[in-house]
Length: 320
Image 1 (cartoon, rainbow, N blue to C red):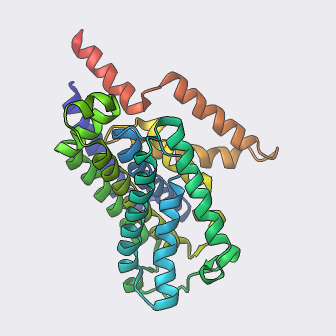
Image 2: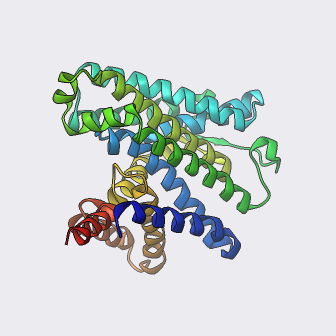
């Protein structure tokens, strides 16, 4: 088996699991499936900027929160359908991403410094929204539940599942097309050696801004879906550092800079988290400790992620 055939098998398996899953899952398992897809969408959004372009972000919660608050505010205050609000929120997040990127990249912030800058921006937005009464302040915003598909509200969780699955598919197709385009090749070149890419004529600032804006766009889509699915948002939820972690972990576990890595990572890490939460309840916090230890073990033994480890194994077998 070569890598190309392995990619086809991986894609086929993921599609079969995704399409057949809601027909066999009960309500509880379906909710876990939706959480997996939210993590997959967040993971794919992070993958664009950090996996392909090499710009490590600790603050993806800022884009997630902007998507959630933009669509929710437009809906509750002005009656704008969340379907339209989702697009507006994603565009606003893309613009904010471009602004953050310009301020960071223009002044040569890279690696750890850029990661800290994104973390700082996420915290700034959380504090601003937390102290803005027009946006609900610390109490958040409760979304009226009307069960109207035109208002992004459905009677069945299965419909929510199909919506988030479509968003994940959209993000995955976007990355697949981007990775084979001039933009994708330039992003990989920047990740490998920024100075060498610039010397060859690559407009480094331009392509970094494209990466962060695209990444922000998809993170905001996840934010709108989260708001509509759970029906409530507040700054401590949608701008929380845990959202940024949920964007990072699927990529690290599955394999950043790969098309299927974040999908495999989300498929593994969310059920694992749920199992830890269910089994280890006797001592407060023990579930998170065990979950953290398991993640460290994955990183130690699969530094390239599950997908990266498997493709390397296949390449090695083929070489032999």
